[in-house]
Image (cartoon, rainbow, N blue to C red; front, side):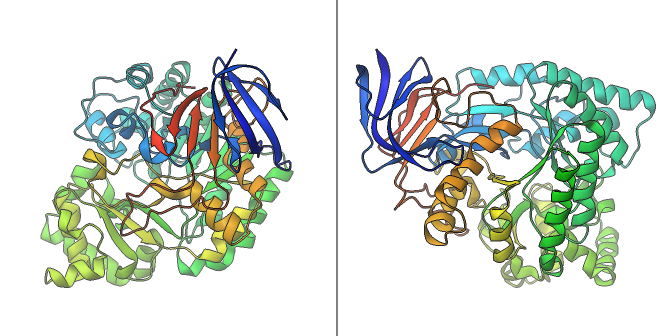
Length: 527
């Protein structure tokens, strides 16, 4: 007997081939049968007439490392149809957490008040497994974690012995379940690493058939050089490369999309395994302190905040800003202070949802002084949204076969502690936004192309066997949606809004979203 049979769905199977009408039978967590008319008995039947059925969406770039422990229901992701998240991105992972770096690293991951009782990847993954999670999780080990554990947060280069110790930590994490290595070369201390250091670590991950996922050194003025470095790392380490949240940030760089894609296509023609992910928005999000010169970011977030208490340091920064405005704009990717929106600042909740140009006059300050004060008040943890991209480039990148869809967001909820900010709407809207806006309304992609970019391509890159496709024998990670109504609702001013048009989501054969409501099932696995 089948556990579940889904009747009369229009199946978009994740391979890119045309949609077809079929019934789907599920047993023991897997797809047991795909046929035009399944007659086998089942414990329950879902009538899917008028609904499209696709593999559960795979988010290749997520930052749910801490939020899944706070809210294992993964509300904002599972309701988008996401059934698998890749965590530990941008060089920041939940493990290893060692010695004096532990507090700083976990704060960077995003839940400083969470009870941290682990140091290793094994221990962290056990925390996920008990009591469980609603989505599958693919963990990466962060370059920043291993570098900070060995070298701290200062601008240093490793000795031979220190490089070997970093490589040992990557190997240990891979042995314990990591699926690859991530880097955040845009952020210190990852920014201080030379290419050869990262190649050495990536080779370790490659030995375990892992992937190298990178927030590259620059996404604006030095974007092309940064992409070339990621390709070089992949080529030398012989590893699959995933360039995170590909974009052309900053108005001076918006005309470079053809050159960018040419570099990627040339790498593929040489046999380098390279891919990219993209979120469907024209704004990015990160720490507000990321706009500072790298010397001012040295030492970790608390050191940054403490440094900005010094009037002489502020004067030095102001002089640097006046003399090197282009470099500040390059880091931020924005033209002026109206393009920087504060999304999270626990110490100053009244400023969340306002841009710097609004905050500064309200406080009787100039914008730069307001930024300094926000960084100090938040102990370096203030987050901001940066409106830094061109819509035409978003569409161009989306069409390219090397580019898949990823959120760069967290699993959040519109209740409890995870609702106490105004985050980027990508945490709630990424995947339905593609289906609604870019498939149905603008026809940037066909439905089959979009689903393939959300499923099988990422599954292949991350080595997820029997995931990301609808076929007999594959795991029953599935999403049912209304193609004519599916849409995102989250906005920059009101981000905590679930999408519409996704009535059912199934994870490992278990119904987690039923008629748009969370069943409470924690059916996810650590993959």
